Image 1 (tube, rainbow, N blue to C red):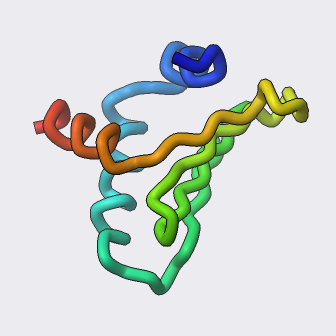
Image 2 (tube, rainbow, N blue to C red):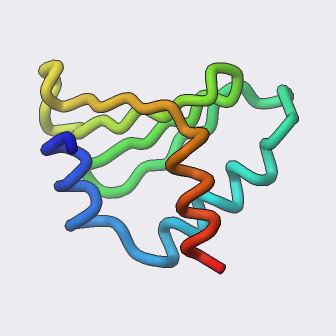
Length: 85
């Protein structure tokens, strides 16, 4: 697992944050009106790309490649949705 993702999970991840993200993902499901959705959490930015079904996590304080993590969302979102029930 990416060090950046681990930092995000330790510092920002709460049930409230995941609910916010999942609500937007579900709302955008099948909709192409907004290609991207951006979440800002202190030093992290999470950008949801609806068209490519990906998310990019960036650490604002680290402008190098190590400060960015990209993942396909299908499987992680499915698991988060199941865990939040």
